[in-house]
Length: 255
Ligand code: BTN
Image (tube, rainbow, N blue to C red; front, side, top):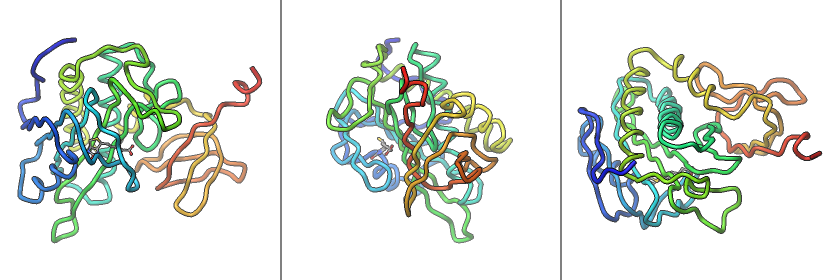
């Protein structure tokens, strides 16, 4: 798909930048000064891109970097569900525009053939009553390139897809705004089902790095709030925070 300007939903205000420190930082500043629900900051490059857990997100030109401001009327604790909404929108957009075998890995990484091609960083603030004031959803997609010094990462180009940034952004935002609206009106149930339909297969062996250790098991599901459910040798375990590393299955290792 080749379009010179992204096409955005009616209720989206797109701010296009050439270079920025971090689209999340820019979006947070805008949100703190009252920017509307649906404001999107998109940049061609970031010079201080941020990943989860304080990590750096390499952000050269050619990849997709954007942050979306959302102001749903919800509890602060429910805001992470928008990460699943975003993952679903991205996986759906990629299935629609490319042939890459995209799959979602908890909580919200997009994987291609076992390698990470996209990550999502959520940042939020509460209002005086403790409800969500604003949510910034940062999305980075390795379209043209990926960091060569990291293991198990890839790009859409390496996976054989050629798509313009504008084309991907247009389809992604169209899906995201639609799914976000559905989540606001109908809750997490439909998002959860869609997310599971795009997820790595149940039974995938994985290591999960926890804040205080690690656990090995097999992916079972996510629960009705979005926590990871892992089958372990000591029974089913519910995990709220962690980093998941899929492992080659016993069958794959034998072959
Ligand atoms: C992760 O660690 O998996 C999350 C990466 C999120 C990167 C995106 S790129 C656009 C937005 N701005 C940032 O500084 N980070 C997010």
